[in-house]
Image 1 (cartoon, one colour):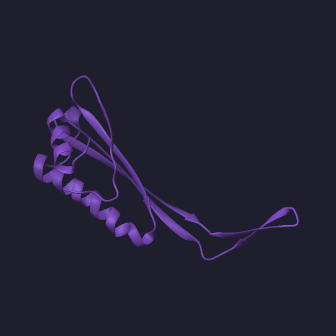
Image 2 (cartoon, rainbow, N blue to C red):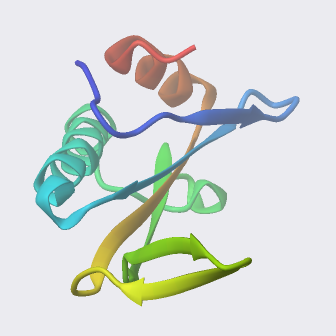
Image 3 (cartoon, one colour):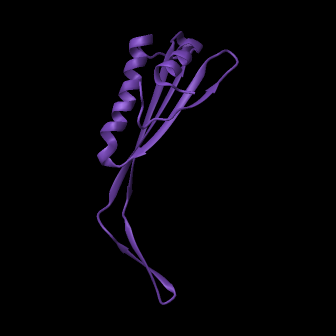
Length: 119
């Protein structure tokens, strides 16, 4: 399955367990695509390995989701007479950032790599 917005970084331990971390920030017009990627990964994990549960409690996989809305106002910047002039160039635009962390057993990590073509 192809992901369009999420790129995962992996870290593992000597027992074969691992953690995949992804962070993506999009404009509001692209939020539906980012949400679809997150849902695609979590749906796959739940179908393939059952409900999320802490590894310390015998679970195969678990996850954490975080989100933030970042608001910025575009500026028109002009140079003249040895100075910069800053003027609001439009309404504030809010980017949405979602973070997804997946942890799992060695079997989960290998299956996730295969399912989504992760390195």
